[in-house]
Length: 104
Image 1: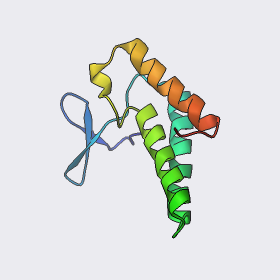
Image 2: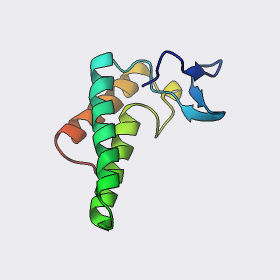
Image 3: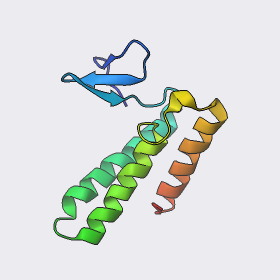
Image 4: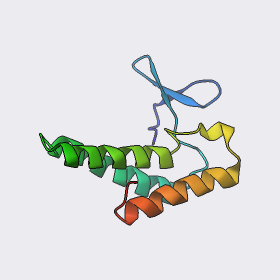
């Protein structure tokens, strides 16, 4: 999720942070769902850090990061290449899987 001072590329597909481009969050993701996905993303990132030398825990946490970022449209098929229904299906599926505790 971008902050008020986030710079976007002209097409809105990417944000620019310290000169580096990152894929922007899909603007069609409703605020509530974006907040829930971001909550899962931050929790998964903390779990990656907390995993330490536990390779299985780190792998599972990274899979959750991937799933949350995919739900936000920041990974996987570019959101601007998908129809609105496909985009909605993407974030709803990712949320459902994250909230069920899954990551596969």
